[in-house]
Length: 268
Image (cartoon, rainbow, N blue to C red; front, top):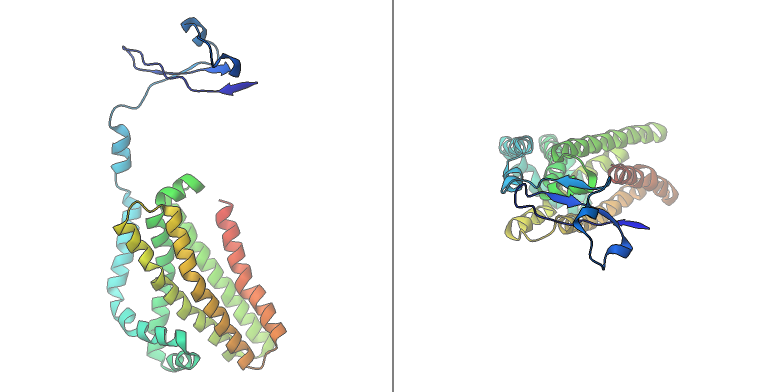
């Protein structure tokens, strides 16, 4: 059986490397120089000194532009952020506060704007922290991954919106499913906030691996998602739906979209 091995031989004139296929039995004995040249031998020239560092240090203009655009959006909608975030945090700890937020139309509209910003935040923050991991693991140019991720979130949002519309029509109850949708907005915003320390950790400790940061974000989002599942249970059961209906809703409207998104990312 043949095994591919790399033998580095430096020539004083051309400084080229030879890649030679040899049987495993030849590993422990001397080999004549003439036997190195065969039909399977390849000669490769190394990169010039400093060329790789120049490639790595060159800025990614597209990604930088996307990040800059995101921060400009934050500045433009800073008023909405400052006004809506306190009410959103209160709604997380009390369902009554959520209903109070929805009663105030202007505050609810501000919350909706912050929700859209949060949807943009997740692809941007993941691409910033794990651009090298994305390139090596998925073989995708990071800005393209950012766009695909954002489009996937939009597709999931549209799918959930259609599910809520269908459930409202079938059960003739718009209020319950509108409350479920708006409660989801609040939890997405809080999830975006609790993952921000992961970015700070990357800035203050560059030695942290990108994979570690992604896991840290996932574990920080998990309690918020569990709280959202509990809130959706309160809303559905509080409006006199059966526990069996809640299980169907959980599988069809909550778990299935996440499974589809995970399958899409892993299949890249």
